Image 1 (tube, each protein chain N blue to C red):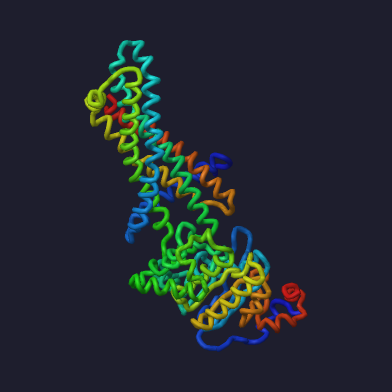
Image 2 (cartoon, rainbow over the protein chains, first blue to last red):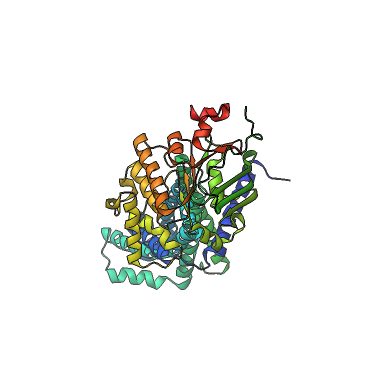
Length: 257
Length: 259
């Protein structure tokens, strides 16, 4: 029986996104490679997002430390504050918050940019000029997004931990060396590797959904706005779904202990 | 009154009866239940300017997008330089597209690039071996043709509507194509600027001896540029002939365009 209504639309959309992703792997990864455009996109997506990621990471580390201190003090384990904050940032909060900020900035920007190019026939103009727009516009943006989010997450985590260090020193005095020694001594491969690996998937999801929504934008300014908006919403939801699956997987593999 | 079936070409007004550059044979194109092109035929000869006239939504833009393979016809053949465009693979299509210029209705200049980068883009993409010196010379030559050399380092957002159209025309001409497809080149422009664009089209056509299909419902543009006018109605070629001959027609469907 054919699915109708919302369920039908959901599966139809899911199928179209899967086909779009398939096209990235079949067409986008074949030569001719658009290296120059890829580097440009890495600069725009990665470097230009760093101030925002850095600022939010710093505040996140600071606030998390200030919020956690009373609870830990109540149990008499205030000295464990750096360890607690460090593990929370590296394993979960850093990757997820960075990815959500990234989805808001990059997902919407890719969706709006490609949507606008579509409605103003710039994508058609590119095709007429002997360029495969999927490879030039889509493959480069998905690849740049996939490669840059892990880098941003690592930098964001570092800045966040510095924020936590400032937070710890608001009410007590802890040396820089002691603070970071405590954090790094408590971290293991099982904390770092899954956290970094899942950010590749987060980045891929943000790039894929941004490009999918923009590339398939309907005509008119409303279509462009809708593409940007739905790119952010859908990629944010996908980030949580991927995160849930990643946590389940690491749990099965015994990496959460 | 002339009926569709009773109205073959009024006369053959082709400039020369030489090589057929574009041959459109029995093409059909529909979107859902909306039939846009139905058994449409057209021949464009070398150095001929053919204007396709029709109401909004008649399928004029669809026709030229089929010719350059931005859309695929449901049925029929489109021969460009003797090659059936809908059957070409990606590389063959690129080779053919390097010989065809396409002026988009909304100009379609890349708004993240300067005028120079916009003009360089087709040169860099078509795998034609140009040195930087050649590229610079071609860019300046193309801008000189449209009188806009001073805009070379400006962004599209800094240009007026007429300037944007002229830059788009320069980009279309930069590879010195044999065929140019114009999608409503004067739409949205004031009469003076529209006339300037018409004159540029004629000047560049004479300079580079191109063949053109011009989509328009601006009758001044049609009058100024057409060697032959093709009227597209209900997805078919209703009539074709010289502008003056169509203007004298008593057919109500033809007259409505000239009133």
